Image (tube, rainbow, N blue to C red):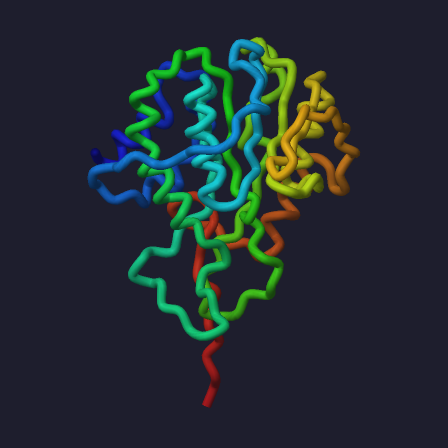
Length: 257
């Protein structure tokens, strides 16, 4: 199975959510067989797919993919929104106290690949509601990166999601944000959620470490709300890749003689 075939399974032509599937990680897949992934988790909190609820799965690393594939088994269409370029395996040279890449997305890449066969077997209907997949660690760990490190920190833009109008046209009036153990809303995601809120969608959230009934919440107007925020984010030193997405080596200063 080659990368184009894998991408087609995650972004089938018949799904209305396929235009939002990010191709960044799929472009770095190697052609090979894709063994099934273990996506087992407690899904008692999930509403029925027939309720037409959109989910935003904002979980760290491969947890998002594994939860997404488990949700697919319950009738939701996983929509990967990962846009950080991976550091290739041959560059993974570690030194004590140094991580080389700002965000390790290789587990996400591997989980996408291993989940492909299972997703294909499920044969989801074209009107399956979406489960948007984000990496909670996309901003990095907050440390200052050093010259010579691979900076693949990324952000999520409002244009990475369909509009409230489009969601409503698909019969969706509720969005549930799923996070692991933090109720805080990351600044980039807050802009997208606020847009949906202003568009009349009901926002709910649930923490996987303490799943119960999703609670309704409101997103306050973020600072720098709107298009200006998008431009400001890209001026914070994030490295845009020439092939799409975020990722690039921080230059090493050369000493003069």
